[in-house]
Length: 241
Image (cartoon, rainbow, N blue to C red):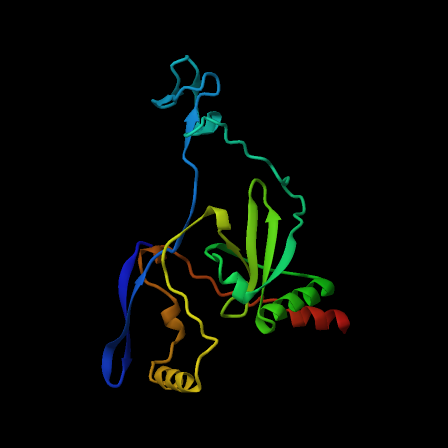
């Protein structure tokens, strides 16, 4: 999504789309990537594409994956070290940090993953970690090595209380743009009262607003939502029973 300015409007006080805030939305972080070239493995030259990759040394390659990737600045080969094998278990490490300390760093999201556990011990320990994030002002950081890349993620919950592992862009790979933060710890009772009065004037959100009607929906066959949502309490109580 490209940067754009949007005016947030609500229907309130008898006025349709009454503007309440004007904001500029933008992606606030990109992943830094080194500039590289694809060169001929035989001579180091740059092949030309003509239905295939032809090099001046006479070598030909049917696909870019047959070429060698090197750093543009130094010519040094880019070598992918393989950390894990297909189907093998990945061992992750968990760390804890105060929220105030974590807020000094970047938490730009790379992607999110849902979590499922099956045994009582995992459920109990996972719940302890989540309690630390909600009640003890802690951030639980999970690190692990994927096939070729090291991952950094934060254990948390979504607004709908789904347990998620939110992968964040590593600090040394993040290109951060200026956006806004807010500190809601020192909110006054008056501010809370004003916010409460303000949101009471907003229209109630209904299920239809969670769907869209743009081109992406064309040809989509609607599926019934899955009711299979596993709760840690269900796992723990089932085993105890």
